[in-house]
Figure 1 (cartoon, rainbow, N blue to C red):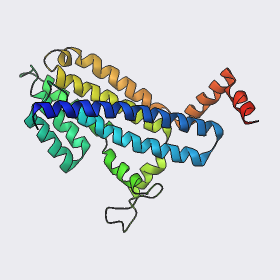
Figure 2: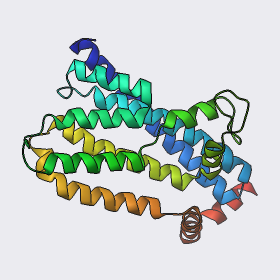
Figure 3: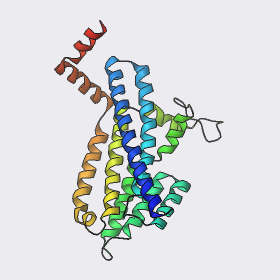
Figure 4: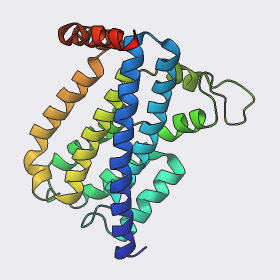
Length: 242
């Protein structure tokens, strides 16, 4: 890969990320409509479509990030891709952070090791390998996930599939964006913005992550119902059906 190819990949993935984000919004709206209609079958179907879109978007967003112009050099991109391919996307994120930290103006003191430790913790906590979930759903394992050999049930992934809901997926999207934003700042402005804004950015990021992950499906449904009552939307839909 040369610099021209790198720019093409970045521009292409930027377009892909934008298109998939729009598709995810449509899936989210369809889940909400199904929740309002109390159509459990449609809720399940649209939630899993939303999950497939999220998994694809997360992969494309990571690719966009590492190909950011004026960020990593070509050899660093190659290293990140290899780690990603061999060990999964979370390891790829960590490699990106590790390489990005090399460009900090913090050769002494505890800033770099402390920042690296915190970012690794954020990745461990909030970035999982979406390709595993995507592959199961893409191969028709929408309720029960099988192991790699397809000769036994994968209990962990089956549980993840059962736990999917629109609130959880929205939280995954938001936390992914927040972590990606922090890494992007590290890549694009390691000597200025990253170090200058570090403490404020981390505090805001963790507060938003906690708020996103504290939401529940039950609360989400109550908000939808309250909005319908406030706007009269339920009555309007009933009139349309009649």
